[in-house]
Length: 163
Length: 461
Ligand SMILES: NC(=O)C1=CN([C@@H]2O[C@H](COP(=O)(O)OP(=O)(O)OC[C@H]3O[C@@H](n4cnc5c(N)ncnc54)[C@H](O)[C@@H]3O)[C@@H](O)[C@H]2O)C=CC1
Ligand SMILES: Cc1cc2nc3c(=O)[nH]c(=O)nc-3n(C[C@H](O)[C@H](O)[C@H](O)COP(=O)(O)O)c2cc1C
Ligand code: SF4
Ligand code: FES
Image (tube, rainbow over all chains, first blue to last red):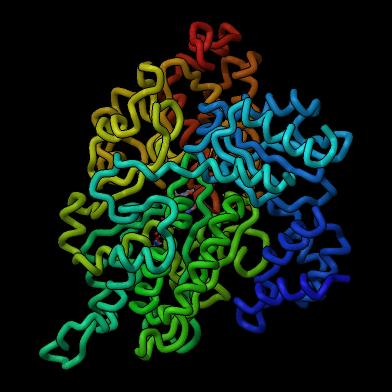
């Protein structure tokens, strides 16, 4: 089931396209689901499919093709650090290593308290701001020196009562 | 403080890469400070004057012959043609020519699409345009829609820059409320609806036909070209796709005329170009300068090579473009023709600078991984070839490479080039060949000595 508020968000996306092309809104609807539930389950895919009049398999093809959809639950805060070459030249890789060390996990993993998932990412389109990371798909944090990474992680831990 | 507040604090610290006075004659970034992105600010910079001009709503006298004020569709397209504006998305295709391919009298729906899926490593110019001057893109798209008789458009924005997507939606609301978008724009007979869409992490969706597939709600797998989008595009209808920066250049051209634009650049390369300078420079950022500006000048604007080191190599047009050694690039001017003559491509204008402490094998390793990761898997040469390239460079870097590996790399690259549906295959192959051509000795050293000849004596890697 989806809430009326979520339905309204879906409808706003669908309205951008010709009536018979509701499928065009699938990218946006899935990202709304992910924002609200943290990941895209197969039940969510079914809900989106019904809403847009698509086959669930066609929705799943989209979820699995695009890198940013979480096909499994992730930590409450997903951190994506860019390590592509332009960022690598300006400590992107080091930022990733620093976070691995700080969080005690390898990239791709989630901390045992369920707070953080750490991932490497490809170019975020913010290369001059390196080191950069994306928090929960929507918030870009730039010029993330080790100090600032520490402040970010410690701050979130404190706010979540897990300091 | 909530966790969201904490994240917001850090999210707010970035994006200042275009607020400096080190542009030269800027047209798109001129006068931006980060807080003046709204409609009223844009109007006070002369915004929407170009739209008024083509619609004959700028108070000018009607044309003596036709009795009508404003510009005809043909006049707009001719003006863009004469300006020598070339596509800023990477291929440098003449924009006016592309617009003239759109069937003018097509009976059904036609579409206009802006490609803001900027994902070419090194490129971060479109984000700053969308974030700090969104209305310039909207105005450029309205003018293009008018010229080609298109009534519906979409801007497809890189999923990773969500703040820019949200802002673009806000700017669209402003433009609708002011009567610049919608039905009967400014009291004319011209209608244009514009919407924002977003990607979600797939580099390949920057390729125009993959982008169209994505807009249709599918996996982003490129289509065969031809047919080009101009004849078979979104939902199979005639569609014109241009890059964000291409559309952003249009209002200036209409306001100031094609001659002024052309004169600002150099022949066949009109106007300014935004270069995203990253890597080993003191001041990484976006620099808007006239086409044909010497590379040395651009490097100087970016504060020169970091820590006073020596320039070693530059990738001049995004990660897909072949690397050029310092001696070659220092002789180039930054425009399509000069960079192409030097054996590379201006591409998206992402200038990746590497100093003498950098190992080229390691640089190539990261790029080859990227292309293998982002191949959409449709064509065998690309899917298998990019995997091979990545694994072989990996083992050379890791010290287990073999003497025959250099030829193997060249061979695999050659077997990808020209044998794939889209240009991603070439984009993966070209950097490999250029790296081996210009820095062969480093690869050989890795194979023979199992170690790096460069980073051994360097301090900043
Ligand atoms: N900005 C970025 O993030 C990235 C940019 N690129 C760049 O993309 C470039 C390759 O892009 P492509 O679209 O494959 O290049 P292309 O040469 O196939 O097309 C360029 C543009 O001209 C149009 N066009 C070309 N010939 C035409 C014809 N005969 N009739 C009608 N329209 C025609 C195409 O539709 C397209 O819009 C590379 O040079 C690379 O630099 C690559 C990756 C990322
Ligand atoms: C793999 C690949 C990725 C691309 N990514 C982008 C991109 O992110 N932005 C863009 O404008 N063009 C990109 N292009 C080029 C587009 O296919 C197309 O040529 C361009 O959007 C046309 O606009 P223009 O004529 O204004 O340059 C890419 C091409 C390829 C092959
Ligand atoms: S060249 Fe690569 S990315 Fe392009 S269509 Fe073929 S497999 Fe997909
Ligand atoms: S390479 Fe890291 S953001 Fe572009």
